Length: 238
Length: 237
Image (cartoon, rainbow over all chains, first blue to last red; front, side):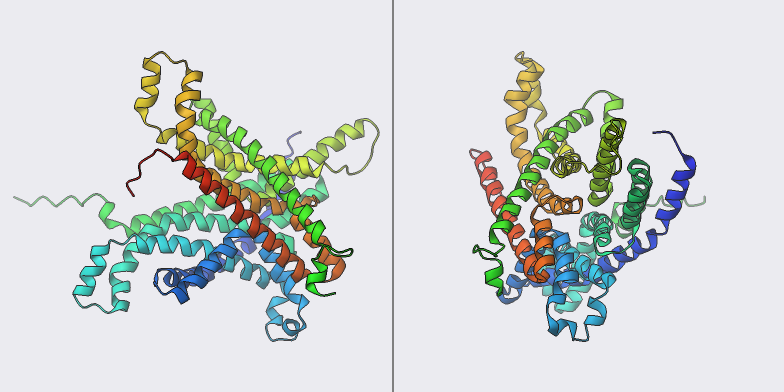
C-alpha cells in the first residue's frame, strides 16, 4: 500500500463533516438517557416492588438485546402499525434521526441506571441515618447528602458509558444517517481503500474518546476536593 | 397471516428459518469468542512481559480496538479482505468486486474486537493472583510452563470468569452487526423476513426475543460455572 497523503487528507476532511452529527447523537442521547436512567435507578432502590420490577424488566430487555435490533424495531418496526403512522408522533418517528436518538436514549438509560444505582448504594448507611435523625426531608437528604457523594462515585462508570455511546452512534449509519462511520463506509465502497479510511476514522474516534476521558477526569478532580493535596499554609511574616 | 402463523413451523412459516439463523448467531459468536480468547491470552502475556516493545504493541492493540466502533472494524475486515482477495483474483484475470466469505470475516472481526477486551480480563485475572503462589511454585523448582498450568491457570480462570461472561454477552450482541456484511444470522434473517412479509415489527421483535433467550440462558451457564469454580472458596460477603 503506497502512502498517499492527498487521499488521506481528502478522507479526513470528508470524515470531519460527520463529527457534528456523531457528537450530536451522543450528546442528545446521553443527556436524555441520564434523566431516564436516574428515574429507573430511583425505582430500583425504592424498595417498592411495583416500581422495582418494571425497572428490572426494562434493564433485562434493553441490556439483553443488541442495540441494532432496538434501532430496527423503532425505525422499521413501528411503521407496521397504522395507528402509529396516523398519530402525531409520526412526524418524529418517520425520521431516522429521531429514531436513532430514541433507541440510543432507551439503550443507554438501561446501562446508566445500573451505574447510578451503584452510586446511590455506595453512600454509607450511617450518613443517611444521621441526616434522617437531624430531621431532613427526603428531598433535602437527596440534594445535600446522597447526590453529591453518589455523583462522584459514579463518574468513572459513567465516563465509560459515554464512550460506549460515542461508539454506538456508529449504528445510526444503518438507518441512513451519515455520521462518521456512515461516511467511512461510503468512502470505502467508493474507493476500495479500506485501510486508509479506517485509519482516518479510527483516529477521529480515538481523539473524541480521549477528549471525553480527559473531560471526565477533570470533572472528577473538580468534584473531589478532599483528594487534592491540602494547600500550603502561608508562612506568617515575622 | 396472523403473527403466530408467520412465526410458526408450518409451510410458509418462518419459525424454522429464524431458529436456524439463531444457530448461526451462536456459531459466529462462539467462533469470535474463542478466537478472541486466543488473542486475549497472547495480548495479556504481551502486556505482562518484560519487553517494552511487546507491552507497547499490546497497549496499541487494546486502545485501538476498544476505542473504535465495532461496525467500523467489521467494515475494515470485510472490505479489507475483499480487496485482498480481489487483487489475488485480479492476478488470475477475475474482474470487479469479490466478496469475502462472510462467516470467516465476521468471526475474525468479532475475534479481534473481543480479544482486546479479553486481554484486559486475563491481565486483571493474572494480577489478582497472589504473588506468593508463583514464588512458591518457582521455589520448589517448577518451570514456567508447569507453574502456569498447575498454579496460575486454575486460579486465574476463576478470577477471569465474570469478565469472560461480560465479553461473551458483548460478542453475542455485536454479532448482530455481522448482518451488514450479508451473513444470514438472526438479524439478517429478520431483515429478510421483514422485507418479504412487510411485517418488520413482528420479525425484529422475534429476533429480539431470541437474542434475549440466548443471552439469559448463557448467563445462567456462566453463573453455574462461576459457582463451580468457586467451590471450596470461603466467602466473607
